[in-house]
Image (spheres, rainbow, N blue to C red):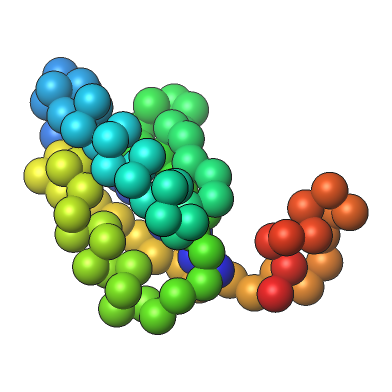
Length: 93
């Protein structure tokens, strides 16, 4: 599984102009079963997406389709959780 961290590189005004398209992109990837959790950072400097396991190249292709590509930089961290609360057992690989 992956943690994708987005950091805005443009002013929030430019981010907000793309927010609806970004949300549509998120929804498509939730429907396809790729994304598990997403949300904005606080303070609002970017966002985080928890992504199901897949080949990293596939994830990179998915991220390239995000309208936020022009306003954010992406950091991908692969993780293999070994201990989780009972409610979150689906996160354990």
